[in-house]
Image 1 (tube, rainbow, N blue to C red):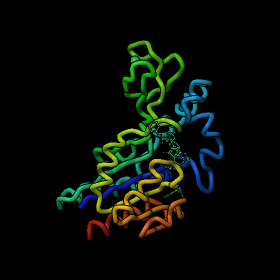
Image 2 (cartoon, rainbow, N blue to C red):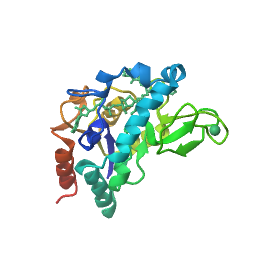
Image 3 (cartoon, rainbow, N blue to C red):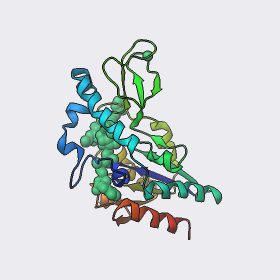
Image 4 (tube, rainbow, N blue to C red):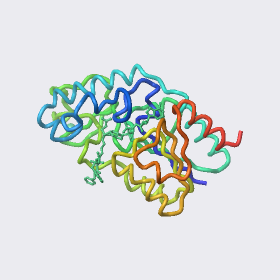
Amino acid sequence: MNVFVLTGAGISAESGLGVFRGPGAALWKRYDPMQLATPEAFARDPALVHDFYNARRNNLIAASPNAAHVALARLEAGLAQRGDDLTLVTQNIDDLHERAGSTGVIHMHGELLKARCASCGAVHDCRDDLSTSSPCDCAGALRPHVVWFGEAPLYMDEIYAALEAADLFVAIGTSGAVYPAAGFVREARAKGVRCCELNLEPSENAAEFDDRRYGPASEIVPSWVEEMLGS
Ligand code: BJW
Ligand code: ZN
């Protein structure tokens, strides 16, 4: 059995990393995404964009994985033990899945703890603040290694191949507002794959899921994983 899990900001909410949309304090209510998360915004005011990502990087370094991240790492190990497979695709730029023990996580929107050279494309580890004077070895300017609106998400060939092979599609903590990730459920359904949503509240595309479970990720993800592993 091939299980495909897509995670979004909701899985990291209880670790203290903000969500973008939804009720309560959401990042895009405080900030305009067009001023921060587009290549045009970075070209116009790189210092402002660096400040936004520097603050989030520092917050991430101080955060820890929660029970939902830990449960998905347990799912990977449990499925592997019985010869099944998990593909974990995340829209999140944090590293909390890895810190919980997941391997081979596919970061389709990039990674906050990496920086990319705008000139040569080299990707560097990055735990320190970036500024307009942080240079790459080639002297080119560094930018956060994240996918902004209008840019192509990463690893799409690998992701579509895994979706093609999936027997179960599960979306966790994502609002279903951002494409192409929001379209994965429709593509899975079109192939007759069972689709399950785990979220705090119904997402924008909730109607497309066969099973829906609502509550905090730290509660509903561990209980779903226990069911999956039959314990
Ligand atoms: C909990 C919880 C708890 C809370 N427990 N749950 C088709 C139609 C219309 C538009 C488009 C389209 N195709 C493309 C577009 C344009 C655009 C787009 O989708 N726009 C929409 C706004 C309409 N898409 C793009 O531009 C993408 N690029 C693209 O398609 O390129 C095509 C291309 C191909 C080839 C060449 C060139 C181009 C790129 C999208 C990049 C997204 N970037 C961001 C920011 C960067 C990283 C960062 O700063 O972190 O990524 S935006 C932001 O949204 C971030 C996220 O990864 C992404 C998704 O958000 P997510 O994860 O769903 O979080 P939220 O906050 O929305 O939802 C949280 C959920 O959790 C809620 O449901 C809560 O209820 C829940 N929750 N607490 C469980 N405790
Ligand atoms: Zn460079």
